[in-house]
Length: 149
Image 1 (cartoon, helix red, strand yellow):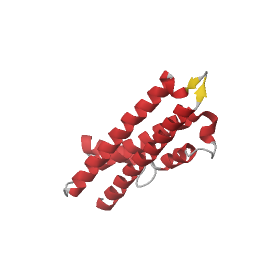
Image 2 (cartoon, helix red, strand yellow; image 1 turned 135 degrees about the vertical axis):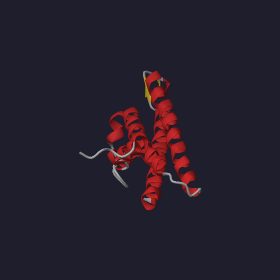
Image 3 (cartoon, rainbow, N blue to C red; image 1 turned 120 degrees about the vertical axis):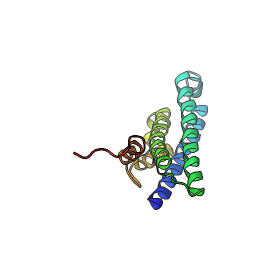
Image 4 (cartoon, helix red, strand yellow; image 1 turned 60 degrees about the vertical axis):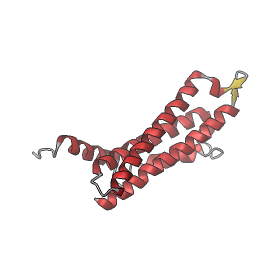
């Protein structure tokens, strides 16, 4: 489990990196792209997506740091690792989806990097144990082993 936990910390950290890159690209784009004579970053819903992305990225970063810190202390971190990987993968998918959304049709073209970030984020929920496996691990830590019937 120790080897899997180290790999899962890496996946969680990668999720933070992909999401940060998507947020940076989206932030730059919404300041440059104009609609109705002003940057689309002035529109309330676009600002909400940017703000929510920043909050979620930081939450995933902190979960990942906690899991890594426990590993460095030599403590069992299975629960924290599963939480960091699950949340990180889900967060990266949401943030990259929002980045594609604010780019409009350009979000799916190879002209902007957000298209690649979107694809990169999708695989994070599969590497080193799927999101569903992480949920089972988390539930087992909270509820104990399930009764097999």
